[in-house]
Length: 314
Image 1 (cartoon, one colour):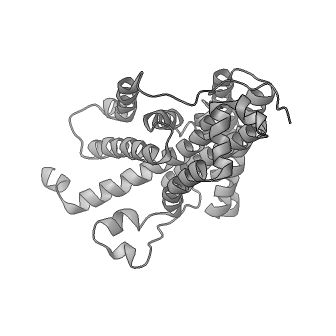
Image 2 (spheres, rainbow, N blue to C red):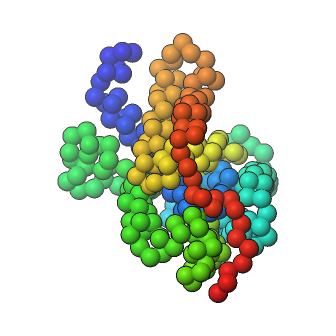
């Protein structure tokens, strides 16, 4: 076993799997940082990812096209984001309660339609998945090429999303509007920024990106849908945003850490190490807990996070 672990093939497979495990988290965390930077706390990431996973699998099942499945996931997650925006911005409901309600709603909704469409069966319907898309020349680079440039397209999109999001937030007028709305909505309103409109857009985009994160599971990893398949990844994505201090590049590091731990526990199970698999499965959540515990009192979120804004003056 030790010889296998120390082999180059193991290292390549482990790093490749780590990146793929981090990809769903990266999509959801990127959406969450947009929403939270605009002042809307979205605890419903888990439900949005689950909705995206189901909508993506359903779209791919009926069209045999994972691209259309991904579009369905994006729309499904976006609709969930719109519901959260309506409740938390227009109705000014408690954003934590709204998020948890969405999680329960998504769990029940996807479970109901899954059983209604597929029936109660132990045989899961397979759907079309994204295949590896090696980048010419770059994929031939030893080690790095195998890990970074021989992945499915969702991994490339997620990695490109990080610098793009960083540029949008800190270098564009719209991004600076998001930051202003999340830090001081009254001041943003006085200079003509429509606070609630910005928040609506950011929250819907958050849902759409979380839906894409869910699609990574059904269309990029498993090739099917199973009930509650997100298994807490939405909450880990929330932790990654805090761990990354609401900055996209740092969030990428946090997602890679959680992805690496997830990939590690799967491989430890495969090597049949003398540790109960129930304990190994908890490793990503344990790391999440330790990471958050170490950050207590050391990070500060957007000043207006989870505080509703009554009405735009304009």
